[in-house]
Length: 203
Ligand code: TYD
Image 1 (cartoon, protein in one colour):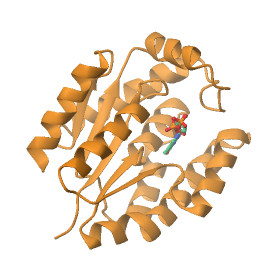
Image 2: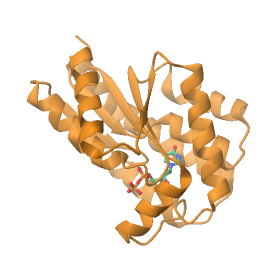
Image 3: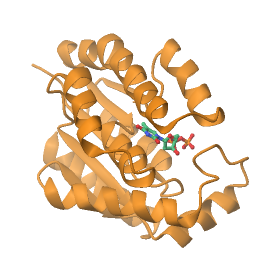
């Protein structure tokens, strides 16, 4: 039986990386074999593209094309083989991020992104997407408190993240069966409980 494909999304500073780790462990505790991965990245080539994407200035269409190039490699080498083995795949970001960041944030035409999505994903969509939502100010505060050097995206202005957040929320409204909206301002323990309930409902 094909495994399930779960993705985590949200603006930078929403805390999704913490929840990614928690979710992977919760699924493993229930006996699932889980492949934990991320985008951009997840393969040796994808990680090299990630490095470029996070550091190198580039045209916004180049950025979108590289995101999808890394995704093609990831789907072909990691995601589909895992799902076919019956493993579960938990991925930190997937194409909702491209629609939110390159579409909403940078203003790239959705039609162009949809062409790439059809080409690269050949119908593959997550079974479940957890969207961690926080106001921009909260996210910025968390990034500042973490104290890591900001990457090319994290250096963007508040208005950029406002558009990214809105694009994510619009997608959640359009696809409520797939996208579960989570209030990421809640205390960690409450979010873990919510995730636990979601895990119980799908395992
Ligand atoms: P992120 O998961 O935030 O990495 P980290 O937690 O290590 O900072 O992802 C890196 C950045 O890539 C993030 O700012 C969003 C951006 N991104 C896009 O702009 N488009 C995409 O399609 C993906 C997958 C990520």
